[in-house]
Image 1 (cartoon, rainbow, N blue to C red):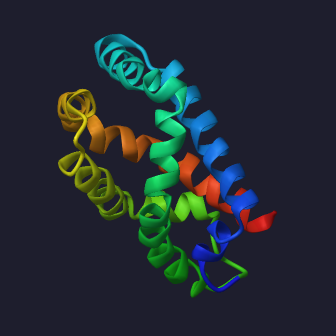
Image 2: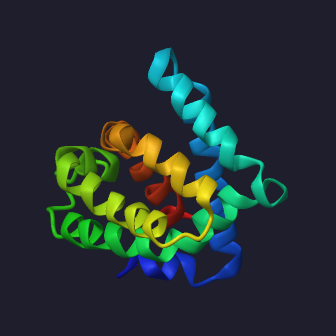
Length: 152
């Protein structure tokens, strides 16, 4: 495979990736605890039931090309590493966590800044200060999703 963008060109593969992302996201949110976890769970609940429960899958589907574009730059660098000593993609992302996190957050920041849904903008604004840490924690899962679908 030369580019991650080929993963989302096939609609059935794209649907599987979106479903995988939703399942992973919901699992991560469910596992959150403490004050931060409560804020994240409440923010998620505020938006998850919008559009008859399809807001999150629809949002992921809509943002997926931009996420894939951002991740593909890292994936191409990753592929340049010696295959014999190349780490798992998730470990590669973690090794560059600060820049990968900011790159991915550019996508959600842009989306939040350009939404006409006040409830979404408000929820995102409230959660954004915690976002970098949460994205960093989720990078191994992002790498796993990519690896799973590249291998499929």
